[in-house]
Image (cartoon, rainbow over all chains, first blue to last red; front, side, top):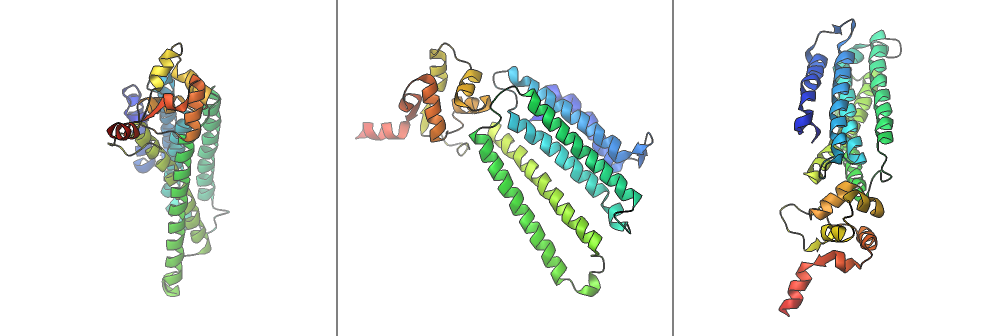
Length: 209
Length: 83
């Protein structure tokens, strides 16, 4: 696993520091949002750890396959984006108008920026692998399993949400305004993406150990 | 996917031996010839993965031998020896 390789252990302090900054840090760091600064710290240290692990592919039994590296990258960014979203959930939920609230704009900008960095690094990782074999039958089997797991999780979550909204009396569901229901659905979507990539990493870890 | 952990697979392979018999072919070369990743060759050599029939044929073709020279079904051999 990336984080447990001795050569990659030095990335743990900045990674954990970035997470702590996002979760428990002051709202502004160096004049910027703590989510942005902490998130960038997590991205840089995570990318460095992944780079170290990929570079180990010269060893006989080390290195990451292309699809496995993409899974680690996916898990890093999907978790990060979901964490940023959860950290902003209260702000987003209290916004009177999602389209015009500056706090919502800021949250959307941070989420969009991490999504863009994810795309950029995905492309960079793809370019780094000169190997013509991007994935094989084992990678495809893992992708099928994780997609099925993600779809099942999404289906269960949507069904439960629909059930709660349908069962709760109208007098007790004043909180379920259209913007909040929209946020809830977006939350489920991000959760599905995060679960899918975490499942992929777990399956790769199980497969390679 | 790999078989259940802790159970010795009935099918063994001779990929490592064949690789060395073919001019010390590297895992990377074999992987490229078969259209798989090097990690799959590592898993096969470690007897941690039973390949699809297609990959079995690709491996045999890479070594220019029959499938049964690459793979060996030990259960069948023991049964036939008993008979």
